[in-house]
Image (cartoon, rainbow, N blue to C red):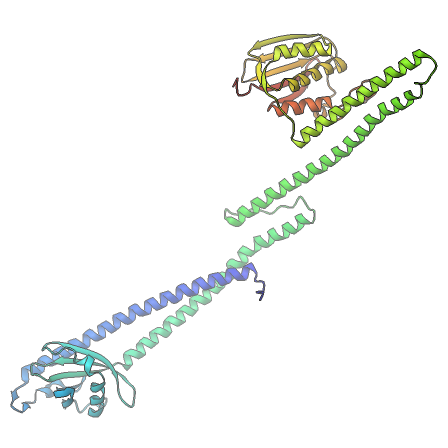
Length: 472
């Protein structure tokens, strides 16, 4: 069977009321027991003390003859409390020898005998002189509760038994119980009121959080909730705001990635279409009668095929970085020698200066690709002279490639390392795919370094590489 749904406010109210009621009931019961035990103790001590005093009176005025008590000592006791001089005979038989007679509330002798027989074992448990016994009994017919106290007398078989009316005391205890019940009910009612207020106070911010979550789910990414106080609800509100902010940033990033992906596909299609169109147009001239024409067509086809192969290789490299499968084969690399080799391979005349230890632990092929790309860009988009400065005096090794050209346009500086980022002039006059700087940055990042650019009398590219574990 499925239980019905219960709101948080109801659960909070129920929990507080339950705790309040339980605590109040326990406290009321404990208070009643303490009060009842103390009152019963005082009542019993007073009764026994009174019985001891009356026994002393009997001992002072009594005379014992061959026929038992011959004097009138019991008459000095009066009628209050109700008393009886009892003789316990053989076989446990009891007999009332004398008893109070004039008080209207006195228990009749036959009823006394009935009560004594009912509690005889408990009342006469102790037989030695000067000892006492006590028991509770009820008066036959009326059912009135009586506290019976026995004071043993020096004469064997004789006992002074006194009967104390317990009904008034019992009524007082009953009244005490009802007072405590009323107090408990009052505290419970107060607890219900406080619980309702607390539940409402707790429910309000949670309801606000729920409404904010619904708005956020509906697409309102700017939804936030106020953070008040330092309790768990405030921490939850702060966590919600943080989550909403991160979610908004993630969705914005996804939108940006989506736009970048669409632009990427469009740029790839454009860069593939240009050489393919050239190759298709050239194929028709391969069967031309003139050998010079066929030779030029073959040259064009070779150039465009190499351009396509380079573009495909760059795309595959980008895909490997995106998939996190870039393989680094680390080895000690002397950056001065690597820069010299890259300049020779690219045919760029560059002035190289080095200071400090410029050896790092890196992947030589990938670092060579970075340096070669920067040198090629310095010549293609900048102007001579090109300078390369190696600084190995710090914790990282810094490589700066600078040219004397016009520099990078200010509007392109934030986008320069994005894929397919090229100026219109560059797209028309160069064979670059617009992926070189993006691949260079990914290679540097894979080594835990950084690649930045700024203008200072020309474009200045700065590569910062960590030395690696062997040169740390």
